[in-house]
Length: 253
Image (cartoon, rainbow, N blue to C red; front, top):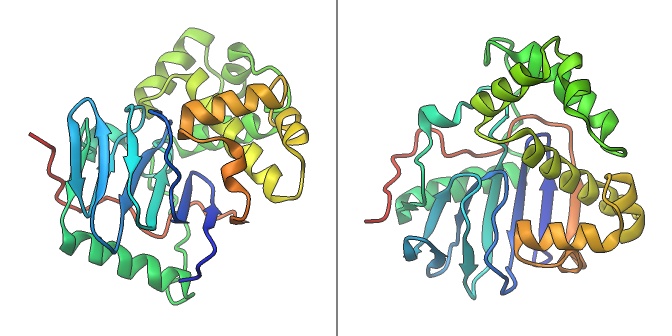
């Protein structure tokens, strides 16, 4: 794998390969798979310190990563087609074994080398695909302005109260938190296109670059400047190269 850090941003997922800077305690609205091929990764949180070759972390859990080794981080949006968080994800941090990280590394390495094609999403993955497609399409067009719940609800034919309940129940996230998460993704895509921090902030619906920076630090523990020197690739694929689905995960005691 290349020495230059790589960030690939898809639709509902992202993959980062490279070193991690020391950062603050933070939380984001995506589940996270992290592993290293050297030594261990220390994951700090309410459970204490989990030192393993890798781990899985559900969305919205405060944490901090500490490692001197390059890592692989896969961010998995809970609203991806075919993903029902309550059905297969543990509620807190879960350890990965060396065998599991080897399997994940093999799959990621094949994908990075172009040997594993991205599968197209199937139409029957989720019973409410049409509703998700409609609201996500609407959100993509609305991120550069204030997002109002009743307008999003209208886009899928629901009342505002029913929409909020449906969204939270189906995704495990509040609508406001998910909008903030989408704004950050949009800002990263805009930065990858050569925009300045100020331009990216405005195009993604943040008040200014300081607002974007504060949100970025709260979400990832580091400032947006940490992306400098990172090769950022944006793709339209809805399927990530690897997931935690099918892995027997062990929660810390």
